[in-house]
Image 1 (cartoon, helix red, strand yellow):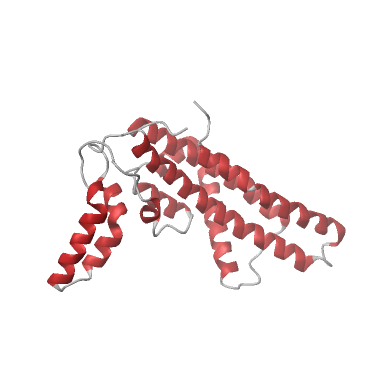
Image 2 (spheres, rainbow, N blue to C red):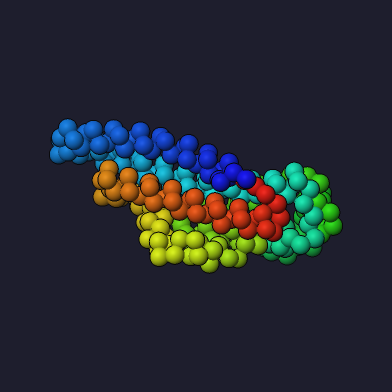
Length: 232
């Protein structure tokens, strides 16, 4: 069995572009850190935004890989968490929650049955691929607690416990790094010009995020294997 999922391998490949930014920032830092301060800040801020984006993309890719495996491998729905079904159709439920007109509500139910009714059964496997975009809707922040909540959509309630078992004392450091990455990225997105890091800071953050993603890959893939099927 491979050590990592394809989602993690793709993540490792994508973060190579962050290394390119760091190499450029380091060259300028060695040349004349004061003179090139503005350019160094731009490169480091760009690296932070990219790293946060790639981490978010990795988590979504891991979720997509898992969801696709349910359909491709014909896994029975009998023991699946009801949360999976909810997140497939949550856009309908959100609409219907706000409706009071009986006719509009009934029409919406008919639309739900036509579009998503085939997913709603605990008998046999999914006959169609799960709409990943709909399932992932609402997840756009890879902070630790947000990732934990995302995995609960699959019925995986032991992410934090399993990460603690795997990482031990290192978990708190990695949790803080992930959250700090997201907070810094948000500050940059909101125009905070002081939100930046040195090339050394970004390099350390990159190393720690890679360790965090690798641990996440292991615990989620192990749980998925034990619960449904192999995804690595």
